[in-house]
Length: 138
Image 1: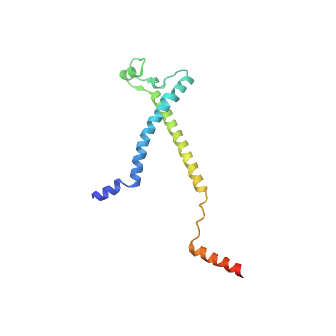
Image 2: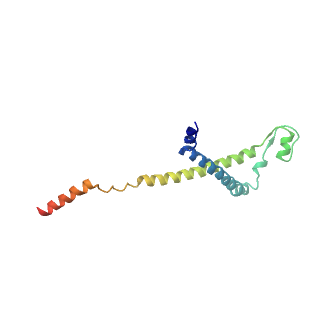
Image 3: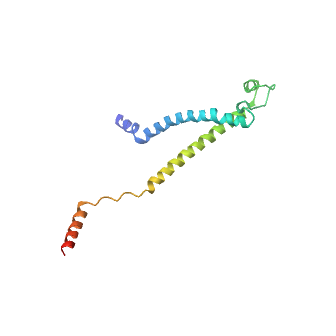
């Protein structure tokens, strides 16, 4: 049973999955930084400084000035957070699309290159040499 577990744990696919998970976690942090530090300030500038995270509709209770207070007062639709997460998703999807597109392009270039012709074996070279010698004598 221990041998089977070792084979399972060290299979190439499982190790590849673990590496992909770790890279994905690091990539997630990178994308979050791109979104929060680069994209959202530009979106905020374009929209006149609108902060999506504070966009909400208070459904019950006294009207409140902040999202936290509105949530404490009653039912609140915080649609601004949804907009932020949607932008995050679209950026991640776009970056992954570009990466996969680049990988597919490199893969096609590798497939398009014809393989180098194999060197002839001794069985092919010797008869050709004999033929050439006989042609010179005759």
